[in-house]
Amino acid sequence: MTNLVEGSKASGYVEPGFEGVRQAFDDNFAEHGEVGAAVAVYVEGRKVVDLWGGVRQVDTELPYDEDTLQLVFSTTKGVTALCANLLVQRGLLDVDAPVAEYWPEFAAAGKADVPVRWLLCHKVGLPYVDADLTLDQVLAWDPVVEALAAMEPVWEPGSGHGYHAVTYGWLVGEVIRRISGRSVGQFVAEELAGPLGLDFWVGLPDDKQALVAPLTNRGPRDGSAPPQPGEGKDLAQMITDALGPDALVLKALGGVPGLLTHEGMFNRPEVRAAELPAANGVGNARSLARLYAAVIGEVTHDGAVVGPLLTPEQTTAALEVQTSGPDKVLLFETVFGLGFMLSSPFSPYGGPRGFGHSGAGGSMAFADPDHGVAFGYAMNRMLANLAGDPRTTGLVAAVYDAIGVTPTFV
Image 1: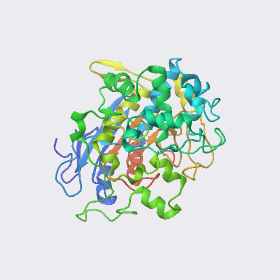
Image 2: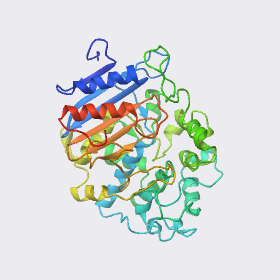
Image 3: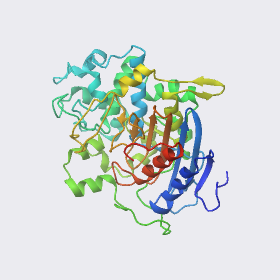
Image 4: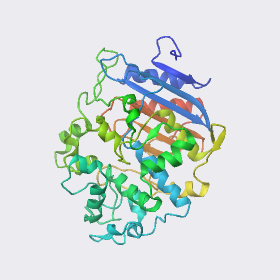
């Protein structure tokens, strides 16, 4: 597809009235060092924006096109949270029941009474795996969940919250597996991706690996954008520089001690092929926006109407605030509902009842049920920040400008 405007980085589709989103997308390349990216927006179940542009890799001409796939780090957590909420809605999961009711081995080390709710809102005190595991063992699932089941919490469960950057996926994912008999990847494929026609996987098939844009912390070399803060440094380096090599957040971001030292880990095909339901979902912005549109309303696929996936009652339960105050891992305030990030200065999701999840480096997907907005953004250039990414801030502001609403926290 040709570019929408001569000189624009964007290809795709913009409904009349949403041209400002295309301009914000172009601005990301000119002002924020974008390399390759995509953004999509639904309003009241109707796709109004579907844009992509740039290149798949720095210093190449291979376009970031309509079929490009992207690993989206913790944006995956929102998808995993949706799977858990669907089980709650069906009466198969009681979030106030002990985890051990579904996963008996978890009762070890004083965790017999820990409720499932604390897994979903990062209160269980298992932000990393205290075990000496190889990468192969980490990717194999069972060794990690066995280690977590046996582990004594780092803090008293329920006494506070701290971001379980990688372990969230194993903890919540194992409960989903015990109840449904399916891994998170299988659950997503059968319950979400299939019915909605999504290009999104937790556990990427071999025949899709060649479509993935590798992640990079390098900006364009052609002088098309000014240098960005942290240019050439990854997030782990910046945290080490600021807080030292023993910071809890470094352990949490790795999930397993030493994992962050594996060079280019998340660009490895074997890592994308494994199931890490907190961190390695692979898809595109179009599928993320479509999924969240179906969470809060109706969308059509192959002539069939799908959604809303969550009832009003379950949506209300999912959006009830579960955390408050400083995060023990991230050291500033984060706001979580039942597995989802809630709209806040850390995660600005448009309206006050916006919910979804952001990912390391910049990816983001959310739904705003009050305004019928669903948003997805994916990119290959990771900026070294945990919140306030200027690329998504500009895009979200443009979306709300188009519908005549002043967004919250933007």
